[in-house]
Length: 183
Image 1 (cartoon, rainbow, N blue to C red):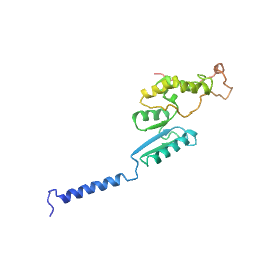
Image 2: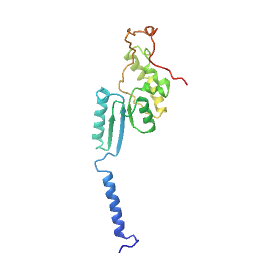
Image 3: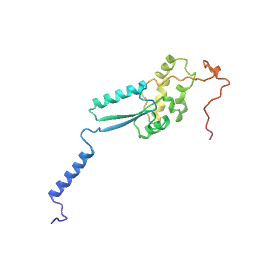
Image 4: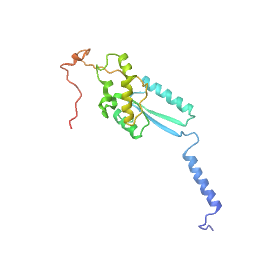
């Protein structure tokens, strides 16, 4: 008849049961780290295709200890929502344009302003130089580490269905689809 006394047999059986539960919970081939990678771009975008290649290579070179799950097409929310999730730690990686961070600091929006740069050569010189370093510092201040050499997320331009926009003067008389928020 069992007593309430803990015997060596009961202690070993209890420890064995706990170990079995642990083994079932964390299989030998499970990743030690699981990262979520969010993006608004589709998997067909060149940056996403390269990100998938990188995630696969990282998984291989870490022997499966780091598994990066990619969520394209805004599956984890819009750009500003994903930035918030990166800041809070809900997702670990995000692929997006730095100018999206303008929702947190308007200066970060410079790369998305039409006619701020005359050419790709000019924007890359700025982003690879002092301006880019300054903007990456803003990201760091927000709790996000931005890569020194990011993907080309596209040069911003302005288009209409009524006339070509070649210079800022071509914007005169056009109404903006953007609405400003009033507080």
